[in-house]
Length: 328
Image 1: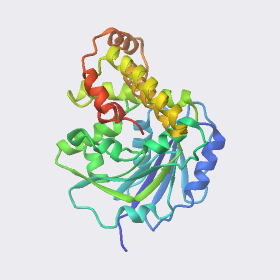
Image 2 (image 1 turned 135 degrees about the vertical axis):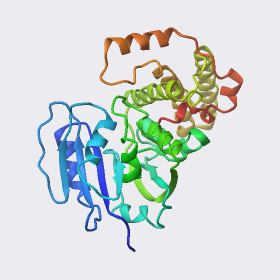
Image 3 (image 1 turned 180 degrees about the horizontal axis):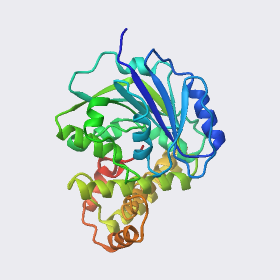
Image 4 (image 1 turned 90 degrees about the vertical axis):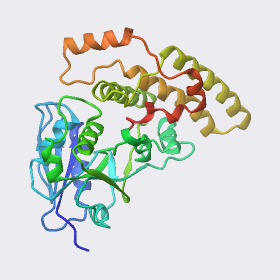
């Protein structure tokens, strides 16, 4: 099967030993002539890691955002398509071939690959087990929002000509850069396809702190999207949300005790925690670099009213709201 040339770009932020492990793992990808693989190290003050095999390591630390790192990696080569996936994912060896089976339409700008949460045993880490049973990282998690749906760049391919025509990702935000670029590409007349067989496995957060921090960060991205694209991710009324979280957790915990099912207990605890962390994260600044002005705006948002939706809506379908959409 013939396919276009592909540049693989993986942004990275973390310790040197993790970068070395990532570099060596990416050498297992099946490449063809004209393909390339670059890891973009966005870690402040990190030591240089040498290239090995087909994988180059590019240092890019002028801005500490995923959008900046991805743009720098995309500019390093000139293949027809750019495949982005995250450093905390494990791609299949034939990932690149699967993206182009079948070939996309000529007006397709993005191909959304499949994302599978890492399997976690029933007695495994509570945070990771919850992500697994909820399928938190699947592309369905964000595509279900219709006109406001978008593919997660934890695994997605972009047609270079479309990507470059709009200047790539925004580099001044910490989260939601994938949704923003998807909306801009659609507005310019491009389309999106899906390839679930082009799959990566996502390694989930292992601790409650990591889980809450991730959801809060994505909440900041959701609030930024609502300001840029009104109606995309409307806020919830916080008092109603808090009461919903308490009532839901207590009711489900009582049911879990009766059933003696650990997964039911995890859902009872983590489902409300996820929604609350995401909503309160909306008050955090999403802009980078962080400035006094950005924090002042965040404090003002923290004090502002929260009007949507009603408690009845929360009770009926807590995961049907957009509070889950920024999970990556």
